[in-house]
Amino acid sequence: MTALDIGVYVPQMGMSYSDVLHRAQRCEELGIGSLWLYDHLYGPGMPEIDSLEAWTLATALLSRTERLRVGHLVLCNQFRHPAVLAKMATTLDQISAGRLQLGLGSGSIEDEHVRTGLDWETFAHRSRRLGEALEILTQAFGTGRVDFAGEHYRVRDMPIRPGPVQLPRPPIVVGGVGEKYTLPLVARYADVWNVPTYALGELEHKMAVLRDLCADIGRDPATIVMSVEAVLALAPDEASLPEVRRIAEKRFGGPGFGLHEGGLIGTAPMIVERLRHWQRLGFGQVVLFTHDRAADRTLELLATQVIGEVTR
Figure 1 (cartoon, rainbow, N blue to C red):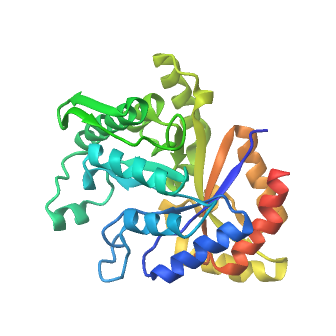
Figure 2: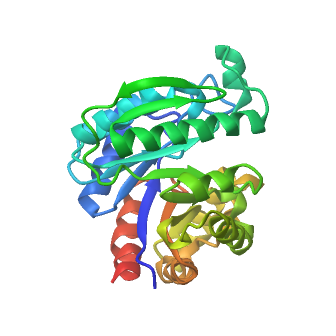
């Protein structure tokens, strides 16, 4: 079976820096491989709640850890010019000794664009911008120089030095399952394809679409790490399961979170079996929302009773 990397998603809405840092350092201590943040100017639908800026927070976490990998699911391409982002990414990869995961998407929340005066346009428009950004990043990481003239971006003979520590480059993660716009970008540019929670009921179909798109451009789909994000409701024992399930339903019961499609509700043996199913499908990474926002007890259970079993 495919080796499985397990990370934890910690959306930073309503959390202080010390809250997030504690979770990052606890993940590192427990041997959890990666921690993931969101990239929004405020929590979606909750502008009155505190929310730390994504890139600054990732930089701080990487500077206070030694082994943990940190990334975003996903950075909004609308917020940063891709040539500037390339420079930011190579610098942070240098600072972190090669622990950056670079997730990038086209933007998903219209309201934050309207409030800040950023162009929203159509999904097709944003997808074309994302494609050009991915081409600029590919040049920057591959040659250390960008020369690009597109519909949305023009970069002339721009050096990106120093380059990244990770070779050939920091993994570029593209999330989404749209067959017309997103999956073609995954096939052409991504090192990692992340399937969001809302698409968990369509996994095998979307995998087949991606394989066909790769075949169309002559890319081996095995060169793309398949990643899936899912809500984890992990109970320490059967007696605790009803309360854990209740919390998960309250926080993540909406259709967009795929709580039931993901099937990660139960005790450790139940979760291990579900993760092994994804391994057999060829997934190499799972990023988990936990029902209790990555509380210590759940991180410890995940590390000792789930990850240890799946990875041995």
